[in-house]
Image 1 (cartoon, rainbow, N blue to C red):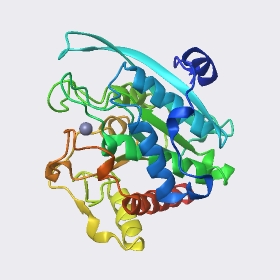
Image 2: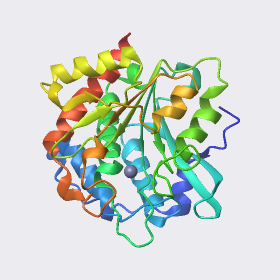
Image 3: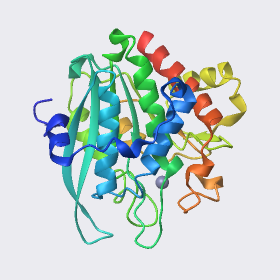
Image 4: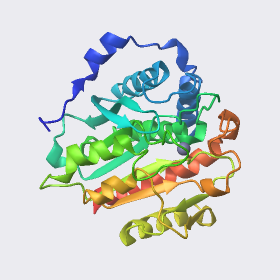
Length: 304
Ligand SMILES: [Zn+2]
């Protein structure tokens, strides 16, 4: 991946500083499973709104990198600039990518990702606790657990997308998905060897957990999802949407990587894209369900 303008995170941390005081984690013994994912969610939300280019988003990347490095994940930054028509200017974005045990591009079998930005509102304190801080928190806990099996961990790439949200009202072909488009195009589209699958998480921690996966989900990934949901006793929470959904899985699918989007049913959520998307929505029990389902799918895909 030499062509990709990665900058080592250690340099990044040196430049940006790393605030450990703001994490506010519970005692060490409580930091497992849904409780750990909740603590990560709380730490990210406590940084404030984190739209692209904000200091809070830089701190979010610092937090993710420092947590991953505790369990030997190596992190890389992928900076890029794109014109944003809704703002009438260029915007700088930065994806964060992580691999375990010095693994290489060709070893990667499964991608696991979520978006790190919160939607930009000039007049609203939008925190995006479930959209998508909770998904990031869940991935940090999955990564910690996975690191105890280095052979499996070496075949996973974690990716934290900047700029998923549109600057205009809704995501459209020309606004939003900035990070996933750049990542898919520059890391994988022209690659001869591609991962067998991707998993995207978004809005997976709500206290009334309701997942609607896109109608065009690849069949083998739908089967994996429904099997894992049954095993978690949560089948009733996972239903197929009536339509495709425009989210970070689309650029990966278009780059030839079949990708599952485990996404909350935002069309039914009164709190979606409002100030009510705060920590009060987030449930440790819901995070436990999502953790169990996502982990089982990931492990099965790695063992196939
Ligand atoms: Zn959103």
